[in-house]
Length: 320
Image 1: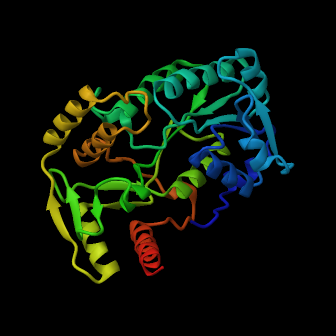
Image 2: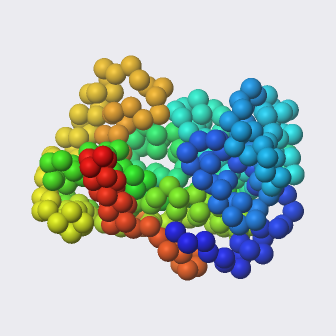
């Protein structure tokens, strides 16, 4: 994905106040910080007391200020975000983090008079997903209610699913079996965006003081049928579609697994992955208002690029 320079982003990067990033040492957080720095933004990284990860990553970079604050320390959180132009949350976890920690971060944002807040969504638009059908979406919906009630301007970044789901993170493309699984319909549109593209968009949104409540982007939009065709073209070997059942059956299986599992506090237990697939293949998670033009001439990373790179990597590993 190339670096765009929309007038709004370039003009506002030097505006007063740093961008505070919470969860900056995580996978998405690190990428967001990198993209903010590429846009010449001032960045303040929020880190937990005792953690050295942020200092090791950016301690020598004069553009990055590392500030310690526990989410249970209201006064420290307020000091940490004071003077910021926007607070960007990139935290990851279950209820204690997505609801608990973000509530504390939001309260500090409001108390410090910071005008804007970007929650850790980076997902499909959970607002259309059936309540109770997807735990992680439900947690984000719960926090979104608090965010909408707060005296702060919020922007959620909706990107569909991360494109690395297609490289073995989820049972969609079965590389060794040369199959592409689908549930219910092989023609359901699926939205995918790489983590790098997600971070770039989030950085641009952070520097756009006029950003709306929700921004929807997708690096690519494909169906299971498209995936089978792409894999056939990329590998030169036919990949066939394989019906794995209905989304209703998958939802029932996920509920059964959740009842007997003891992993409710994990971020991505197996049953949560099943819930994601149900949300995607039922069509409830499909983005309806994708607006890539908002960000100018961006070269998005498509599904073909992601799959081709993964196939090449697998080949290199096998050869070695």
